[in-house]
Length: 114
Image: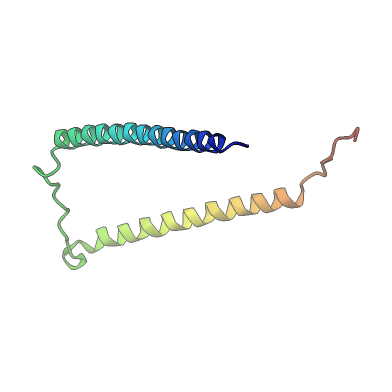
């Protein structure tokens, strides 16, 4: 192989490398521009929200000692009933699942013609 063929091969490889790098650079530039546009849009949305002007007030803490005893007892009983209801619902679903697993009919898992 003559020496000039190696020069042509290397010139082709270098040009291919430069073309690939240029293509990747162009794609990266387009992605950066799209990201900048999305950030600009989000910034516009944040300014429209005006979050810093009217911060929400937090509920004031009210100690239990100054509340009515009957109201507190009712709240505790409601929480207890709700917790018991959740436990019973979970227990019922677990029992139903166990019965389904125990009484599952045998099914053929392969193709009958195989």
